[in-house]
Image (cartoon, one colour):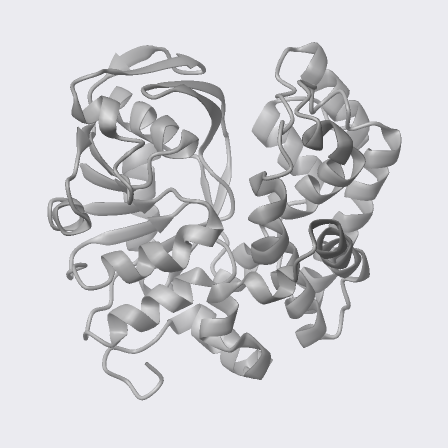
Length: 363
């Protein structure tokens, strides 16, 4: 299949390497053009770790060229770039294409559904609860893949196109997907924000000082217990909505292939196996700048909507806002554009199921 990847960071490079290895054709588009310059000049994309090889993905000069030449458009940007990406691709998406959001945040699939509906277009918009791969960019054309996940939760908007969305994902990435049936479930399936909150709070001075430190090793018993309590808040919201989502224990087991134990112990196992990862070496990390406004804040708002307050999540947003001297609740441009605060639970649930109708009044 022909896949146009919006983004050129570590996840975009990892996805390109994975898909190229599987025999698919990929093209990358970087909004600035800087991150794809080496590839555009002829360098091979060199992958190490979970995938080994040298690959030659294409580079699109414009977003229009990327979208119009693809069967699948794959969003691989941090959540703070999603609204920009959706606005960029929406004028060019056509019937017969599929959009995959890796990973989904803050009901972004609804924002894209509305933008497409205004053009009379309805396509499967597939939201993933996490990424298929994880890794670090090592250079302008080099990436190290730390893991390929065994299971990924997804949902398609509209739900009537679920079979189509699942089939495309399986054709690209294999039999590793669990269709949760509702975007609402995916909104509660991304564990990165809650996990990164605990890790960043427990290691902020390491981040600020630019230290090199093992992430897995520093999920100590106290940090691990915080992650477990944060998970209970997320699970309580899911239960109130009648949804089944993955637990933090299942997440670490399926993502990093370690036996189920306490979260701290599972991370120690990852560290011992050399798979614990390296923590952020800057306070300007997506662990905060992406995950706090687009992950934690969304969970807080959803908890309020269903009457299950996420008090630890809210405390995290407020603590990070105090640390950074900014209001992270105000930085989520997707939730503001959707006016989630003014939306009823019934309306949100219906939109998560059906999306916006083409040329309909809702759009």
